[in-house]
Length: 293
Figure 1: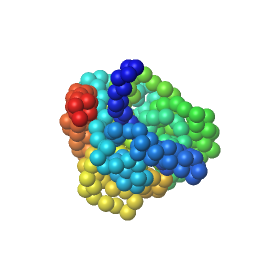
Figure 2: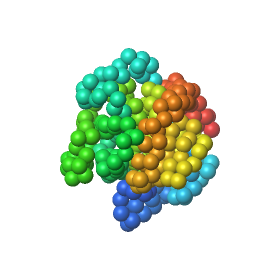
Figure 3: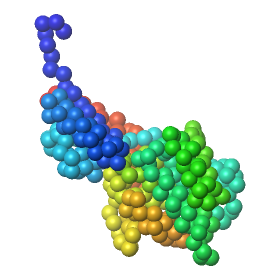
């Protein structure tokens, strides 16, 4: 390279961002300043993984110029989930679920940004609400992280240890997703959450807080209720609203046909939009264009 300098093209990909809900105000401003500076002085292209993420990173926080951005959604190997119906009783037997119990699962890191405490609040509302019309629920937490012990203590304090099970890290996603009836996401901030894509690949109904790329994944709002929304492929509740999340969850729990419809819609969506082959093809096109530009 000596004597023949070449222009190096730099690409920065956001899978999420730390511009809110991670750090205090000062540290967040420092990170945002760094990102804006690097985008302006040292970056040719910025890749985001959803339209909502572009609107947050560029529109809300002012990082980069429109012409720098490319949206390339995630893509995963869907093959391991194709026979989920053959595996749906493995997890149920492991956790001792009764035949009439509905399993509501959270899958992810047990860190502050995931706000798993919201799920514990929802479990507490369920546990303390005297309503004989409610089906039986069991809450399953899959994953580990720095907050696990704190969350287990909180579950004890809230009196929900009998309806919630912490499974820790697992390497059998094809098994635990198969056994869940509903997948719940409680995050304060998200890029495009893999747990929702994987849940849809297993035809599971999803309820999530309305943050980041979850809004794109769940699609157009079809019906609005007081504190939650029914979308094409799942339910949305306001971030941090335990009552709203609970109301949406119970609505979903009581309507088996709605769960089946959302599960089918989700499967069709991820098969069309989030397969590994599509991601590889998109990345090839992107880098070829970048090289030839």
